[in-house]
Length: 246
Image (cartoon, rainbow, N blue to C red; front, side, top):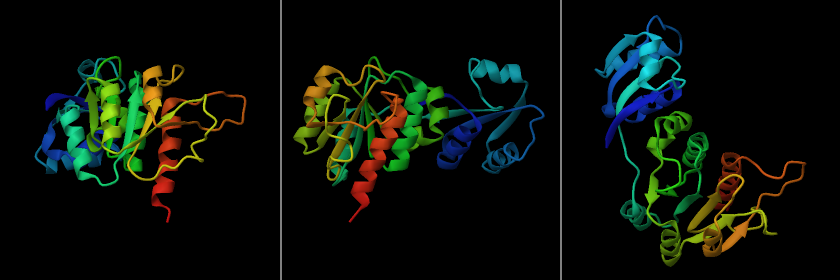
């Protein structure tokens, strides 16, 4: 674990709810006393967490000018998992439901994706260590607590990890516009990993070649593509629909 600041009402509240033992200190904007902040302060004090009231400049400095909504928490944060953590997840899940991210570099997209992945019951989100967004404070804020709930696995070699998933019996489906098969025509039951590529670039060539199949979201309007976090949510919930239907 590492120590860092998390910020934003939803992010801090969710972290305090799920991991109160890891909140070390709470910093609140001075004279901020309203219906949203007061319960958070009361909860922290009830848990014995120190609450300090600060000027806005102090909070701005702690989060390097990010939008903190008047609350910052110093906390012990879980680091990204690795290949060993992924193996443990595969060993404990009879029907693993995984999400692979190939080249997602925008922290806001990653945060939104983690939130959707947690809501959809994804067992792990897998991404490469290099040339990809990390679990930063901005990601955690956008994820609204999901970054602490869904395992985030950073792997050294994504292609090798995909091969290992396939060897373990996981069906890997990649989202790509050049296929004729829609997400609604594909079978998304059983051990599954959905692979999503960066907006604009899509999946890298090798990643696409390693996938067992490719699917697309049908587009009926003038827009040719969707934001990757929106596209991911659509794909995940089609998988949820299929996996929960009789």
